[in-house]
Amino acid sequence: MKESVVVIPTYNEIENIEAIIRAVFSLPHPFHLLIVDDNSPDGTAQEVMRLQTEFTDRLFLEQRKGKLGLGTAYIHGFKYALRNGYQYIFEMDADFSHNPNDLMHLYHACADEGYDLAIGSRYSSGVNVVNWPMSRVLLSYFASRYVRLITGMPIHDATAGFKCYTRRVLETINLDRIRFIGYAFQIEMKFLTFKYGFRIKEVPIIFTDRTKGQSKMSKGIIKEAFLGVIQMKLGSYFRQFSR
Image: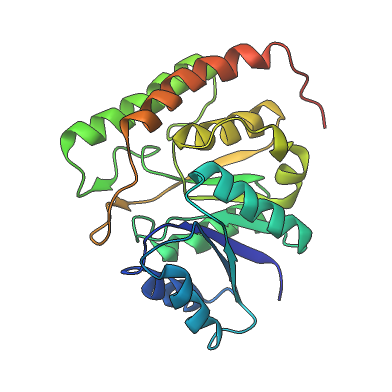
């Protein structure tokens, strides 16, 4: 059944990629999986191609020419999903910081409960983060509080990257107008979903920091997110949100 696709951007995830693919395909729902690889020098794409011989009809690969940013990778994946008729489009990291089993909870929130966006939330029921230093927990938590204050979004985890969109959300948002490419991309997508009046649900999850591979966080990404929130809010005053 071609209904649900999980989009996973990768850059140097050779240590995680086979395990995450097998974990998704072990779930009771027949998820498809799209890997968007940014020309990983460690052979991530080659490993996906090897696994495609085993998962012929469910595992797909899109290769890009270089490291072009998280946001553009997801937009590439979203456009692929829309072209290919998927109804539920998921975002997930490759490094097991998002538990693949929680895909089922996000799916049920949209498919069975009628929500348009389901967010795997670290902060909707306290602080559910494992293996992060306290400094990063505080940065992430208060970043979400800051975003909530500036934008007015009733969302506890504004920077979450574990989500399920219904097709109609991605068809409504003009993906070619998305401005940000780092973690601000995650905020911008939620903000637009909120402004268009779609129904949003936060699903509590436990976030576990990666144990293999390297984090992609940087000071530039943090700065983009901090300034981007203000730009998004100001820009929204000059834009109509009708669907």
